[in-house]
Image (cartoon, rainbow, N blue to C red; front, side):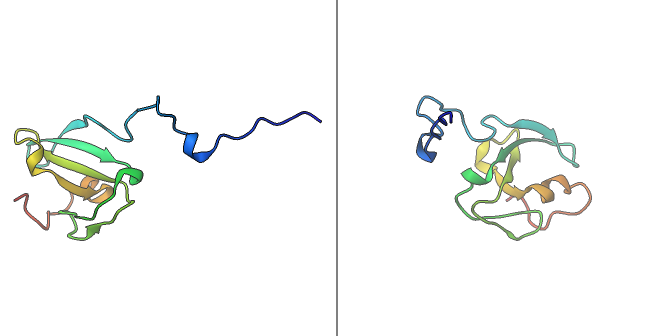
Length: 101
């Protein structure tokens, strides 16, 4: 009977040489319903470690949930907001419950 290769342990599944980021590092630019440009970054669930309040539905974005981070392109990252992915995608069809400020 042939021998099987040993499985790599979970701790070595991502080697130290493999330093790729887990998600969009630079993001992308999107135009909002108001005609303004927004920088958009997707955050995978594995990188979501804190709670945030979604401005689209006014519910919490829980740790471990993949979501979107968006901010006005001209203001920099100081005004970024964390959105549920569905709320960000549906922002053109409903009004925002919270203001950017």
